[in-house]
Length: 230
Image (cartoon, rainbow, N blue to C red; front, side):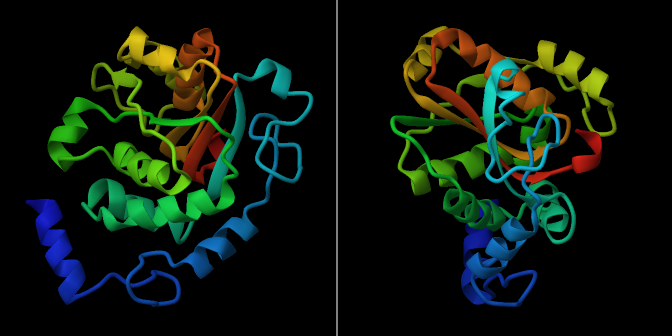
């Protein structure tokens, strides 16, 4: 019902870019490109300044996750837009963000897209999983299959938790949905989608679960990154 109402509303009163006001997108391609250009690219593990989204030469050997594609910082306007997607039922931003993320990704083939799932409780409240929705649009734009590989058990809250707590929670909450499905990633470049990268606990846990199935490379794809908590 929500998606039908949103479709009707988008026709009668189309979304406009939160930054420049251009119609039909909550974040137009021009403003998304500006947000991406303002993000100071660095190694997502140690913070060393570098060009591109890959881990630096020192961190890469000890990280299962090899690259983290980030649209921008978790700050205006992205923090507001992510909030609209997660808490206000505005699904349109998932489509707009996916286009912007596809523009900054150079996907290697063969590619497989998956995502970090939200909890069942939040699914019941929101009626959709924002990361799954983002991953669906992203997979379409990079021309890769979407395979749900993970499940989240329990309803523990990560918001406000420190890095140690998040790491411990991720170990128990995030598990493989199916070993047989995971076997499909052998030899593939895997792109794990999430909305926000805070400490890296969730993405790191998912990457570690997949590493046993011989993927070519595992990458993270997120809308925004909280620099002060990583």
